[in-house]
Length: 246
Image 1 (cartoon, rainbow, N blue to C red):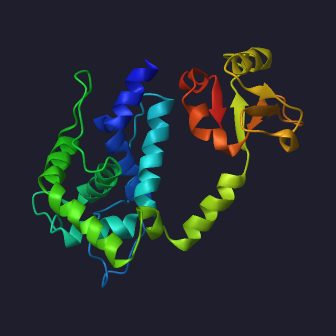
Image 2 (tube, one colour):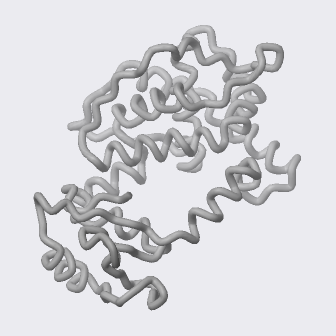
């Protein structure tokens, strides 16, 4: 099961993830003055209805939306420079989906997305995906021109300074994880983690890479080094919500 999830992520996400990420992005994207607004996002006055398949889908939907937000200016510039926008066949209400899927497309090095047979198809996602891929050469060229113009080795150069500083601070903070005591006990979590090669230490001051500690004030909270984030989130303890990232 874990191998199947990894394969989906490598080749893109299920349609439902893109749709949920677009709804999240619609509510958080940076609003610009009308005289400088080049990409229009339609009306976002109503709270979107989102249904997540599981906790993993929720997490990747939010990650995708916030990654699109980080690079909103760059992604909009790519759409404009490539002439992929404006697109009269795609309404303003789907501009968020266009930006979210463009972020993922460049993150996959502009490789075509592979769809699993059992995946539930969403018509809007299919339409936007096919549209972007018709422009894939021009989109890749537009990104390359931006990077050459700014002498940027990667797109991380285009992250706004305020967000970059926030990420630097956040990356240094330990990860706090709640134990879902309705599903598992502290003792069983510790045993499971130790079987996976992690070592329990007394406090965060004793942290090495593969270590963790029990919070001194809340005994249903564990603390991990921030460097373990991705490895932790791929554990089955998180997949079935026995552990929850704070």
